[in-house]
Length: 85
Image (cartoon, rainbow, N blue to C red; front, side, top):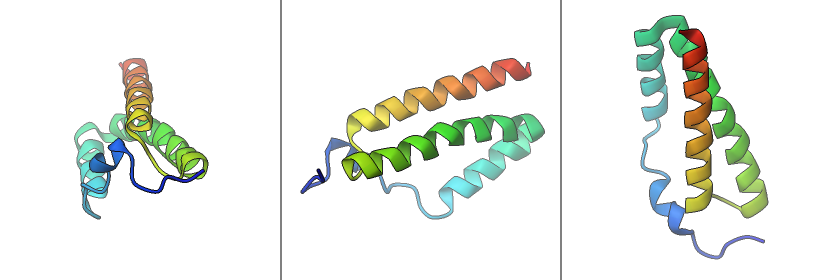
C-alpha cells in the first residue's frame, strides 16, 4: 500500500544536494584512509539494503524507518571501527 502524502520522515529527506554524499565520503576516506573506507562501506550496507526494502514495501520512508536505519548504520559502523583498533 502506498502513501498518498509523505509521512513525517519526509521532512528529513531530500536535504542533501547531489554532491553532498560523495564529498562527505571522500573527506572521511581521505582522513582515515583504508580504515575510513571500511567504515564507510559498513555504513553504506544497511543504508542501501533498508532504503530499497522500505521503498518497495512502504513506497518510501517514514520517521520510524529513518530512525531504525540510523541506529543500525551507527551500530555497524562503530563495530567495524572498534574491530579496526
